Image 1 (cartoon, rainbow, N blue to C red):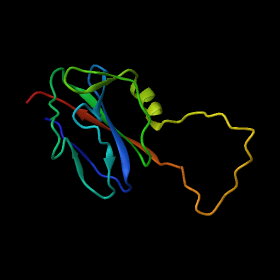
Image 2 (image 1 turned 90 degrees about the horizontal axis):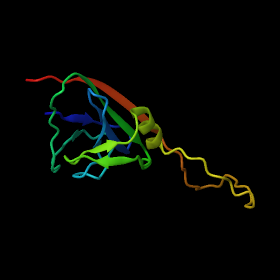
Image 3 (image 1 turned 90 degrees about the vertical axis):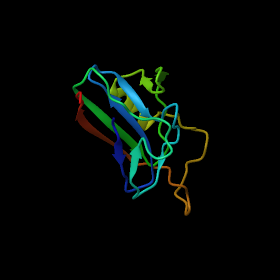
Image 4 (image 1 turned 60 degrees about the horizontal axis):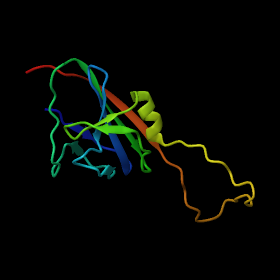
Length: 142
């Protein structure tokens, strides 16, 4: 059984991706049983945690795999997935492409007819922090 422990120094939204020994890219969180991806700062979390209606059981084939947490202070961008029979989501892209889409960087055309914006007191800060951390894991039979 696998348990993932995470903690952040800011409130954040998280996506957890698992790359198995054969190269499949699976989205552990969010999943069919847990769609909430918001985490509070300075709080220890485990996935799956209390209240979750799933567990993570590792099966063959075994070997070197990885778990990646993608976290942002703003909601994460959508990635293309297809549902697996076990409630996990299979990413329709390689891990590096999932990372790019998760950051949700988009080009938007400027409205050239609108007056230029100037800095104003109390203006909302739309900036976001993004971090990605990968842990290599070796799975094996008991």
